[in-house]
Amino acid sequence: MTKTLSLIVSLAFLVAFNIIFFFATGSDHSAPVWTCYAFLHIACIATLVVPVVEAKGKTAYESKLTSLSIAYAYYAVEFVLMLAVLAYEMLIDKEFGNIVVLPLQVIVTVACVVILASNLLMNDTIAKKQAVHDAQNSFIKTISATLKYIESIAADQKLKDKINDVYTIAHTSPIKTSESVKIQEDEIVGLLSEIEGKVEAKDDAATLELLEKVVKLLNKRNFVLKTQY
Image 1 (cartoon, rainbow, N blue to C red):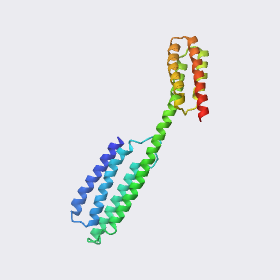
Image 2: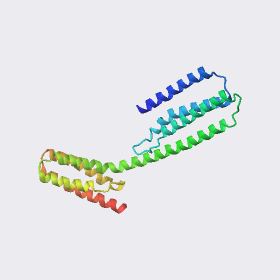
Image 3: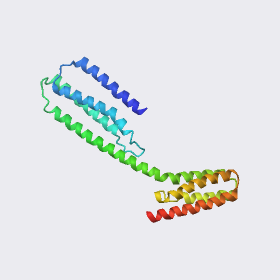
Image 4: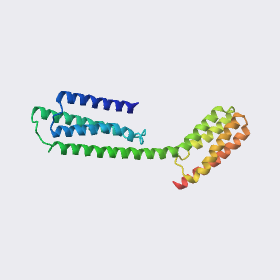
């Protein structure tokens, strides 16, 4: 929705500007005005392209200075330059050259590209780190949530207490994982599925036996990870 609104606003502004520009000032302008006119359209294109590029790497942890805000700042600067050069042409000198305007436009555009590229790269790096963090964190979050659910459907209080003990071990286990403990983690997930079925069947003895297996596997997993990190 935000990207669509951004697209509509950018295009509407550009159309309105072109209508006013040609109807109010005509098409007989100096080179600096047409230079600013061209760069203003480049800035508009930037506001349309950036949301598409940024969407690939956008995360909840992206920097507050979004790439889109940089593009709109560039757009605003170009609009102000356009008005200033147009006013100078109309009020002071109709024949002034491009010796100042063109280098200024190049400097502004290059600065914007550098800042924009840096921000996009930073957001992409943050996105990749967040993806790795989420992948590493998913196992503990998943089994902790599953154990809490199993505890909620258990009828016997002693069984609830035992499940809670296992939950505490799981919840305080190392979040960071590795391929060396993948087997243990897969076994734990499988056992929890079995435990859920046993609890629903009110088979407390089998449930306790499976919970002990989970504890052993968790302890083994945690020991391996602690020796690695």
